[in-house]
Length: 275
Image (tube, rainbow, N blue to C red; front, side, top):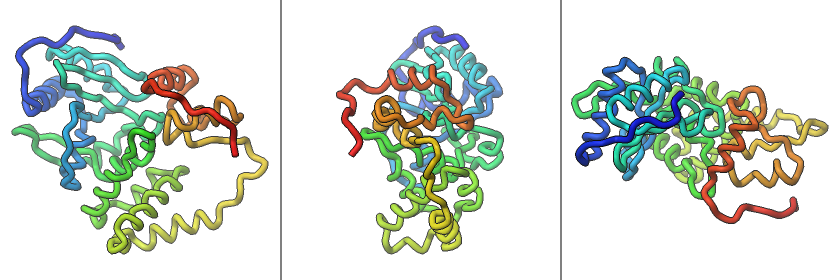
C-alpha cells in the first residue's frame, strides 16, 4: 500500500456532505463497506455524540482499493496501522477504514456483510454493522482514556431482544469471559432490565466459569494487552508475563506491537512491581 497520497483540496464541506462524498466514492469504486462506530450506536441506541471520524468497516483485502478510491476523490490517505486501520482525510474530517480491532482480533469477514442491516444515508443505500459485531468489537476497548462498555450497555438496553445471542457468544469464542463481564456489568447498570439478557446465555457463561480449571503450571500469560495497549505494558515488559497479542490467533507481531505501543498518547507510563 502507498503510505501517503495526495492531500485533499476544495471548499469546506459540512459533515453530511463529507459522509455522503465518502460513501459515494467507495460505492462508485464497487468497494464493499459497512458503516459502524458512533453512527450505528445512534441508529441502534439513540445515543448521539459529535465525532470527526466516520468509521467504515472493510475486509482486509479491500483496504488498498478503498484507499485508492478515496485518493481519487481528493482525500489524503494512509495505512495508519497495518494490522487494523487506514485513514482518509479531507480537511478536518476523517474516514477510518477499519478491518480489525486494534488488538488484532475481530477481523472483518464475510459474516459481517451477510448479517449487515440495510439503511439509507443522505439518499444513498448503505449497510450498517450488525449490533453483534459492534458489541464484539467494542467489548475489548478498555483504555484509561476510553471505555466502550457504555455503548454496549446502551445497545443492549435498546435492542437486547433482537440480538442473535448464539452468534454473539460464538464470536467471542475463547474470549467469552470478556462478554460475560459486560453482561454482568449490564445487570448492575440496569437492575430492572436484567431479565432481558437470556437466562440460557448467562447460565452457559457462568457454567463455563464454574467448570474452568485453574491455569496452574501453564505459561504466565497476560491477556490484558488485548483490552488496553498501555495499562498492561508493565506486565509484559517487566513482570515476565507473555503478551497474548503474540498468540497465533491474533493478527499482530512484534513489529505491529511496537508501532501500536509507540503511538500511545504521551503521558507518564505505569511503573512498579506486582503486589
